[in-house]
Length: 283
Image (cartoon, rainbow, N blue to C red; front, side):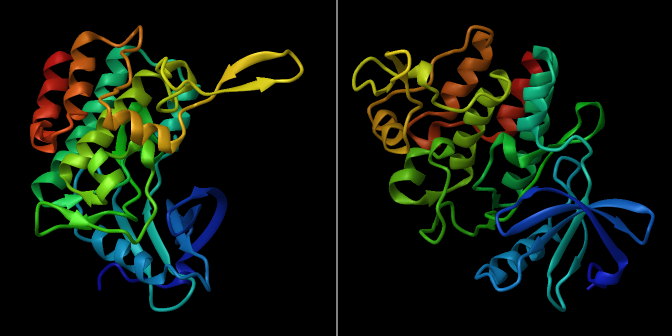
């Protein structure tokens, strides 16, 4: 295996964050190359899944996907070594930087490009969200975190083995655990709201529909404070046709793309290839 190397080649530095199956550190490879190193904590039950992610990443080669450099899987602790994206997660990046609409839409198109590659090669990501997009120099972004990704032979992949993020999940995932590239398209629509909202959490309190409004009471000021949607509310409201409203600075053309991503019928949602040219054409 050309990717298999020895642990001794890496020196781990500061912790960058948490992945699906372990921690991610900044590392130095052979004293010269900065890398990101995902480690699996010894003694966990996720060894098989961690190794599956490493195996899958060896097959994924595209400019808009974070690239695998090496693995250490002959002995514990296991490492997955990838390129280091210097500006971290897109979620934190767009919260900290005031990016204009043109830049935000270019970022969206870059993500669609990476997902179109997965689509063409029959892979599903299953965890598409701003937290799993990484940012390099000059607003250059790549899709990352393939811990839940799968190669699929059939159109639908069914799984109940893992919890999944409800607020990013298509209704067929939330209700039936049925995943497909079109459920990734739904998640992309949610990701677009994160991008245009500069890191806003999906289904925030300000979006609550009038019926069934939840609130909590702040005892100190005796005023009602809206609560963000709960997971149960998201499922119930989506089933009844609710979709997040258009943000004030969201162009009509972009909101139309979001609504298509959120079509109740997965077959009516655009492909990532179509989403890519729509974004490129509009912006």
